Image (cartoon, rainbow, N blue to C red; front, side, top):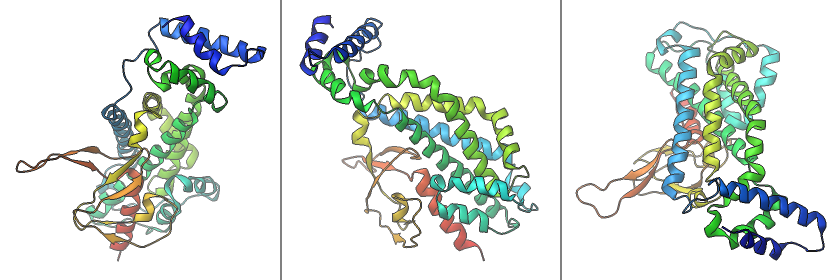
Length: 338
C-alpha cells in the first residue's frame, strides 16, 4: 500500500481548510502506515463464517469450562448436598445480589430464593440443581462477555471517516475491524481488563451465594473466586478480545440463526428474546419446526447434522444457548418439585 493511495482516500472525506481535521487525519494516516508496515493490517480475505463460528465456540467452551469448575470447587459433588441446608443470605448480601436480575432474569432470582430450605435426598435432584447453578453462572458469563465486546465497538465519531477509507482501500487494508482496532480496541484492552475480571468475579459470586449451597458470605466468596480463578477469567477476557476481531464483519450473517428443537421438546419462546419475561406459555415442537431467534454469546453448540442413509443436504444444528437452556431448566425443575 502506498502513501498516495491513503492520502487520496483521506482527501475525499476531509475539508482541506479545516486544520483540526487535517491534523487528525494525518495522525491516523501515519498510524495506519506503521501498522501496515508491521504486517498487522494485512489479511488476504475477510473472516469466513466458519472462522466466526470457531471463535464463538472457543469462547463458549471457555465459559462452560469455567462454570463447571466453579461449581465443582465451591459446591462439591451432588452427593454432598443431600444433607445440607441452604445457607441464610444476609440482608446486605441480598441487596447486592438483586442486581444480578438483568443477567439471569427475575424468574431465576425468585427460583433460587424460593427453592426448598433443604435439598432433595435423591441424587438425581441434587445433580440437576447443581447443573442449574452451573447454567446460571454460564448465562451470567455469556452476558458479561457480550457487554465487554460491545464496549469495544468502534468510535462512532470516526465511523464515517474510517468507513470511507475502508471502502476505497478494502483490498489493501483487509478487514474493517483491522482498520478500527488501532483507534479504539488496542488502547482499551489493558484499560478494560481489570474491570472485566472484577465483574466476572463479582457476578459469579452472586450466583453462588444466591444458590444457597455455599456457607460463605458475598465478600468471602469473591475473595475465594479471585484467589483460584483470576487467571481463568483473564483468559476468558482474552477470548473476548479475539472474538471481537470478527464482530461486525462476516459474523453479521451469523447474528441471526435458526434453532431446530428435538421432536416433542418443550421450549419457552419468550425466553429466547427476553430473560425477564414472565410468560408461562410453552409450545411443543415437531422435528421439522425451526425457530428463528436473535442469538448472542452463549450458544452451547453450532454444527452440521450429516444426513443419514446418503441424504442430500446437511442441516445446520444449533443447541440451546445458555440463557434459553437455563430458563427451560428452571421451569422443568419447578414442575418436578412435589
